[in-house]
Length: 319
Length: 310
Image 1: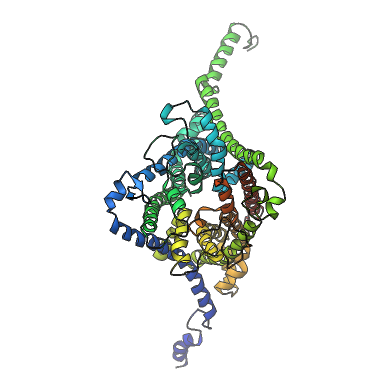
Image 2: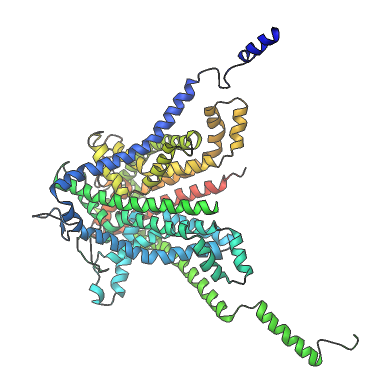
């Protein structure tokens, strides 16, 4: 009887739960506070989307979406106004193009040099310097384009070649400054990707008689390709969203031109010159700003999603 | 075997020849490869030299142009429409006020989000992954769009704060929050699980473990992220433009007044046509770069100095 009683009451004598005996409300409050902070990031995105989409919907009530996306005449504050966004989209893309022409070879060259050629000592000095370049405010790049790059272009540009002579505000000057700005992004992310390639792959290639250049270009580069592409996409997204450089050095003339030495208006420059705090909510120009911003947001979001995906892929393979 | 010497006579000749050919085949790379290799290395070196030259040119040009205005007047005089009397004093005070609020909001919210994601969040839960993806994407949103968010949500309804310092601080906080969150998460993740398990095994609650073990160990990494975020916020101009940043202030900005900031005033100088203002802008840009380089170098030093191996 006693044994049966013990077996019946035994487990009951021990605490039933392994959890704490006090309810620990404090811990729950802390959990709630932390969760609230984490949710703030989601709220920020929601707020961005709402603040862009609502005025844009109103905008597309006034202006047909086809006229906006495919129109070639941009002058929302002219009389009569025209809302063809193509000139400023092309402006943004051509500035980005010249930036990439400069930044991709220099960024990738630097990355290959740092990961495959430089000794640990050189690396230890050069990498922080590149990080410093990444920390320079964009207004400094814009000013540099205006006072240094533009005069140099005007000096060396051959006369009327390709729409010359270059103006004070030009696509090329802004593009080169943006290129200098995004070099550290390409260099440091690509360097990380190439450094993550396992040593065994390199050693195998060397053992088969490859030269250093061959190992770098035929083994390490392809193995790190997804990381490298991600760095370039991220750089494109930064270049598209850059405001101060295009505002200072590229000008605000919405020309539909591919010439590198003409002044154009980029999407961000339009927003920067037009959204100055005193525009009335609900006016056409206010709604136009948000429609352009929505397009810009969509373009950069697409790039970012793509690059996040690619980075994840190269992490999965080698880490 | 006496009398046989492989280094003399016909045998010697054959041996030397064979050895030469073998050596050529085994160790020497084809000459074309050697040349190609050297050219490749030279091109790479040129690339990195160009990047560094760009940095030197940028700093050097501003130094040469702005040298005559690089004195105490630059930081002791208020902004003025006469370039000789213009300085950054009230712009610096404006930036300091903005940054005071930014730090006050940025550090608790950023660190709390990082703790939540690393310590409480379930890696595979849908909500955690949604928040993660969200933060990664927020890091890539153009800064001017944050300015529009500030204009539409903070300066005007629903928050309706108006164009004051706090509006600028909240906008910049949202802009640089991802930097702090990502850096803090890295730092928290670097603390090995055994530390947590030890603390929990000794009877500490989860929060006690985080506060007494995990956070102290990850402070250097968090501090690095915070400094980098603040230096980015100091240099940002674009998001302040839609918020109606005052480019020409004659008063000393405070927490509830109109706001101004160093890059905004410098941007205004850049736009002026008088050459004196260009000189002033060069000096101002240099001051801003110097400030940010000092902050970033400190952050990088901090990261390397306290990089802990367990």
